[in-house]
Image (tube, rainbow, N blue to C red; front, side, top):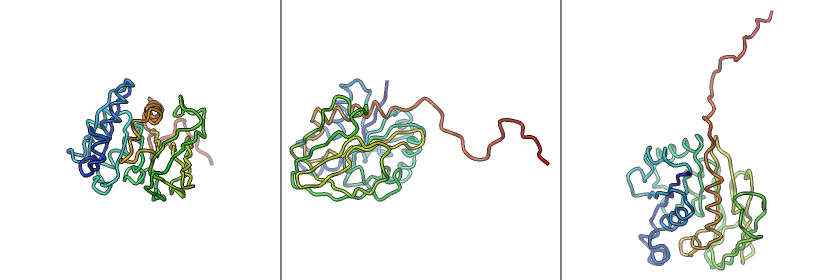
Length: 241
């Protein structure tokens, strides 16, 4: 059974009464609840816990890590980011949501600024499925429509995705690569755009379905990480004159 940890900085919920009303158990609590309903053993972790809730024990017991952050990216300790990166390279799946595009861990794994255009004006968003055969899109129709969301627009400064699953159109005219997969070492990474804190996006059943699908897709492979460095020959090398 896949073991999931949902990480959230949990700052908007403490500062903004609108967010607190929408997500009384925190964004992490809402996401963890529907993943538990799907049958995934799920725990949560937040920024203000010791080691941000991501101790060595927790990370070793996590098969897929879901990440939401926004206000406090810079408060995440570099040594924790390094531990998460190593776990991804070892095979742990990572699902980065919405404003997590600017998180230290995502930028570290991407190697780019991960910057973009944005606007908060209650845009309608339509997420078009552009890779219908992909398991992350299973159970989703031609598109997902959200009546109100924050706009993210191109250019999105990320490496070209290994696979592009969703492309968003916004009422103001912008488009955005909203569902991107990557392979890093033995691990898989999925970035999924929707989820601004002042909208009830994570209660949307189709958005929930995508995240559930992504957890299943990101499960670790059963193999050791490759060994690097100087290597002894596998066969005898004949001496050539």
